[in-house]
Length: 359
Image 1 (cartoon, rainbow, N blue to C red):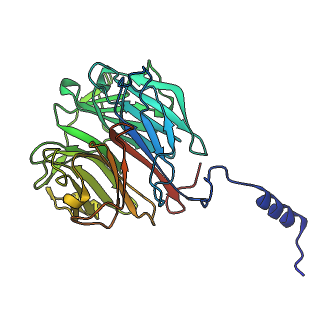
Image 2: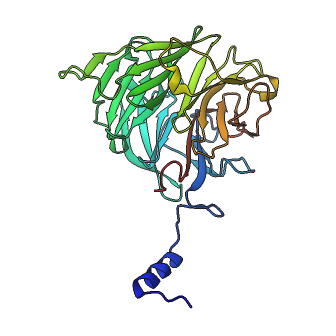
Image 3: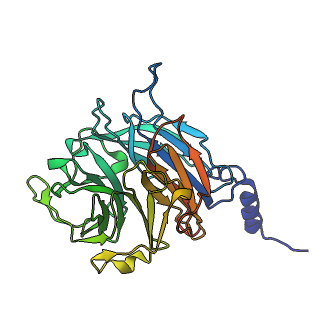
């Protein structure tokens, strides 16, 4: 017969009686995947009701791939959306559709059950007139906002983004000139941004977290340290860098109308490719079977056991591919968003013991 001391017995009883509310039904602790989708429509309802601009697939890696949660943020049409577990929140920019000027960022809290709630935290600036990408530096609690709109094009640094306020201004205004930028991914004091148009590639901005600015107006001219060209790239958009697997994925398309011409470019061991001037994809997902037409954003399941990448296509579809896919392959799952709106931004919260603890 095993005998326990009182402290040991008490610990066992406490453990048996506790429950982790952050785990959704039938899911194990430290093992879940939630996909947040930003939809760009605004003011399209004949009944005058606002368009829902965030929808959630609560179990994105399960056999059932469908929306089961909806949310309406204050954004006048959803644009880029960003999640970081240390923020415990989504940050969403407005799509700024025609007739709905809304150069703002909004914070939507996420509780330990994955439920969304709007907050008063938001920030409005002319520098957010055409936000194309968001990234976060945890050590300094700073958000990098990529804006691509003529003279206001640049990378803007927002302090303490979860608690930002209407009267707040960016701490740094890094003017880039009229670069054709889209998307954002951060690692080790480097920001990676898509270069649009023919001869596309990836802009690499070094020292993004520590760059000095003029103390008078907090500004600086900030050019990419280098551009990594991608042969054949036509219209690069969203990108995602899984630093655990050291894999970068980026979307690309040509005319945006021919089914199957969209592409997902995958670069394995991406960190080893940064010293050159050109990038060559390890694999390319493309072809009629893929149905990729106008892919605008991509996210990777960053868990060590993660199997999927998710793609938002402006033909009102969300595709799930296996992370090992290559060539003309059928999607593992397809979510048709025709009745919900046009997906333009994705954020994924996928966690287990290989990433970070739960909230």
